[in-house]
Image (cartoon, rainbow, N blue to C red; front, side, top):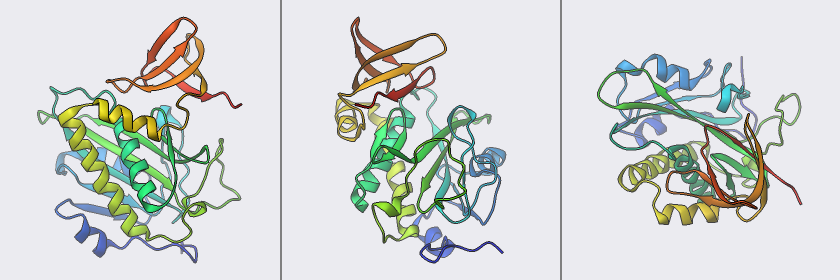
Length: 263
């Protein structure tokens, strides 16, 4: 039988269901993918419904990368949201990243965001976001927003191919269930603002304060080119702004990756 570590709280379905009402909550001890569960059941869901799990066996990140999800060591959640098809989706994942940063900073962890939406602790990856569009015809854009947040991943036998961090490094004592509620509520709050205002000047300024590499030299990589420049935050579409020797250039999250040039 799978067991939680001594310091880890189990997901409390009664507390979570009450705190997150009126949204429906689906909680699993073990599942292939919380995102996939919502995608597979999209026709029966209501906006705001949530899937949580103690463990994923086939979690995925951006660009098809696997997302490691050992039992009981993360917040693993997926959220179903509907979007007005007349409104732009560009920059939505950056908004979700800002919501997570704001929540964790209030909880006591000085985290930052790496464009477009990786959450970093001391420049190591703490959380990731995957936004997928569901194939469902209901006069709306149907979104599944997946979030994986490392709480206490085992430091041995966790096959992750990049530097990563655990939240318990910054906050030794926290309420896992309360934090889950705060994250979901804040993500929905930011989505509501984004739907009304898009990426406003205020959001762009907030990004600067959360940005791990603002003003730093970075490399932008794509299949076609490599560009080096100084990171300058995001524009009104959520595109990354890079000051290069040839002027200011902007790139979308779907076409490039960002690498920090360590000094």
